[in-house]
Each structure stands twice: as structure tokens, then as C-alpha cells.
Amino acid sequence: MPEPLLSVVVNTLNAAKYLEAALRSAQGIADDLVVVDMHSDDATREIAERFGARIFLHPRTGGYVEPARNFAIGQARGTWVLVLDADERLDDGLRRNLRGFLNTDPEANAFTIVFRTLAAGRWLRGTGWGPDREQHLRLFRRGHVHWPPRIHSLPKVSGQVEALPIPGAAIEHLNFPELRDFVARLEPYSGQEMQALAESGIRWTPERMLSDAVEELYSRYQPQLDGVHSLVFASFMAFYRFLTWARLWEREGCPDAELPPDPDALFRKLARLARGQSHVAEGVSAVSGAWNDEGGWRWLQRTALLRVDPDRLATPARLSLGFLGPPARAVAFPLVVSVRCGSWASNLRLGPEASGMLEVPLAASTAPVDIQVECSSAFVPERVGLGSDGRELAVRLQRVEWGAAS
Figure 1 (tube, helix red, strand yellow):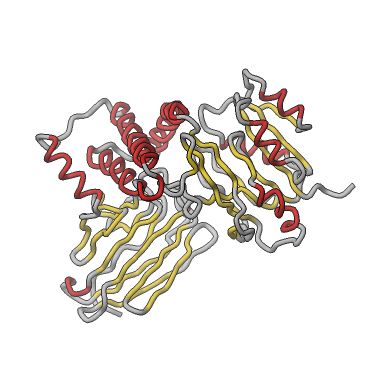
Figure 2 (spheres, one colour; figure 1 turned 180 degrees about the vertical axis):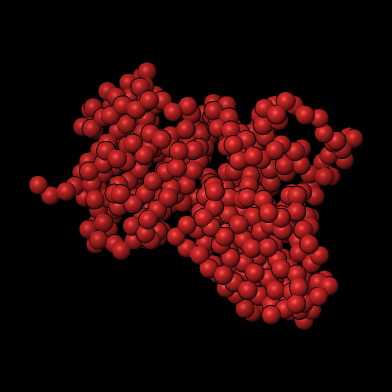
């Protein structure tokens, strides 16, 4: 009997509200349907049985799915595995074209798929969830992908990763159909992320707590795309970041700290942080998405921009960028670094399976150098570092070397 071509794997916990739509969307393209349930109290398993799924049980994992997801993938029999959450469904483009694409035996071992997100009755075009920004690795050859057992971790992949080349195909995510769905996730998710910060040795400071929240708001606020929905969900995400740090503050015994004396001074400080008016070394500044954190740059969002102004350098210098892996906490892969200097431009794609080095000699006559960093996801405030100190960061780029140009 030939091996099944495609397994669709779904993890569930009290998912009866959404599961039927998810499994129906996989009918007709899945040769093997796997549901791993974490002892639901509702009709989840009965729904899975009606669709002929092979059902397995897994202990509850405390608010995040990654350990159970690896177990579920291990039950798949297909050459290819597609991971689908219970509140997601395959759109018509995927249902019509996915099997034909897999029958071509593509060279890559894993593919990212565009997501469309429903929030409070509206399909978001932006606000951090738009289809041009949100892609997730969900389709891969069996045996080539593993999720680290921590919240919001990115999968580790052996082999090449590409975007799924099926125009218009997407996974539809019923992310927050009602506002209470978002609120219900605040307690478990913020607790897990607080724990990750604590285990990494990161300490609470008011600057970190406030800047993380404000950067989230500034990066997501796009009313021109999503109207009031953008205001609501950008603010929700800002509070989520604030709550994560507040829980770390509580864990550390609620330490006191010096703060601006009044709300006006506080909001002026927040505006400076959010607009990237940070400074690391003479001639180097953060334009957006990053700020100076104890001597090193810290990327707070998926896209950040640094600028080097050679006219402000005291001496000629050499800017060196490279991957210093393997990192202790690979939370933001793949990482793409784009460097532009006048008409010259170059890109680096960095991660566990990709490394490289760029060096740019700088002198007073050199055009300003823009360094843009893009990562597929960013949840832990370490993010990405271009640091001038020796701290361990999730991903490190070599520091700017100030000295004689080579």
C-alpha cells in the first residue's frame, strides 16, 4: 500500500466551537487526518470521530501547544505534513491546488503559508496580521521539522524553506472572533512569556516594560487599513506586552524605580522611545523598531531600521555584520538583514541553517548606511541584537568596530 501523500495534523482542547470548519476544509485533500486532543471537556473528540480522524490523547500543556504539537506530528503517516490549528481552515485556493503542487515533488523541505486573520468580525489587512506580513511554516516533509517546547517558538527545520508558490492560497485564522477571546488568552500567554524572560536572566526595568508596550502600539496602529479595529487590537497587543513585563516585575518582588514625575513627562518619554530616538554610538542611531538597551541595540518588532551616518564618525570605521550562532534562544528566525549604502545594496539571510558576513568600510565621504532587519516573528523582547556589550541575545550581529578601516 503506497504511503499517504498528505497528513493534516490538528491539536485540540475544548475546540468544538471551531473544529468542524477546520476538518471540513481538509476533507478531499488529506489522505491522513490526525487529531491530538488534550482531554477536552466538550464535544471535540466526537466531532473528530465524525470526520474519520485518527484520535490520540495528550496531557494538557499549560496554555501553549508546542509539546503536544511535536507529539501530533509524530503520529502523521504522510510524506507531507500540514499543521492546522482548530480555529483555522484552508481557503479555496489551498483546497484546489495543494495536492497538485505536492505531486510535483518540490525541492524544498518546508513551506510557509500566508495567513488571513479574522478579528471581531473583520478580516484584517494590517495591524501586524495582514496577509502581506503574516506567514507561518505549516507545510513540510515528515521528519524535517520540530517545534521547541516553549510558547510562540519557531520551528527548527532541516533543509530549504520557501514560501508556498500558490498565488492567493491562505490559511484563514479565526483569531479573535470576539474581544473576550483575546482577553481569555492574556493570563496563560503572558505568564508563559514572563517565565521565558525570567529563565533567560532578563531583569525588569520600567524602560523595558514601557518601550515594549509602546513599540507594539506604534508598529501595529494602521487605521488606514483596519479602521477602529486597528486601534483596538494594537492597544490590546500593547497591553499584552505591558502585562508580561508587569508579571516579571511582580515575580522580582515589585521593585521600586525612578519614574517621570507626571503623566506629561511620562508620555514625552514614551514618544521618544517609540519614534526610535535612541542612540548607541556616535553616528549610529535607531530610526524605527529598535532602541538602546544597556549598550546594545534591541529589536522590538519584526522590522527595524538602524542608520549609520559616516559624517558623524570621529575616525574611519568598518561596519561588520555576521551571524554569531548557534544562539541560545532562536526565537526570531529566519532573520533577513538588508544593508544599503547609496546605490549599493546587499542582503544576508541568517539563521541556524544560513550564515554570512558583510563588511562595509566607512569614511566621511561615505553615504549613510541603512541596516534593516526583518524576522518572521518576534515575541521575546530580546529579539535581535547588534550589541556593543557581551550579553547573550537570541540572535547576535557583530558589533560596530570603531577603528582604522581595513
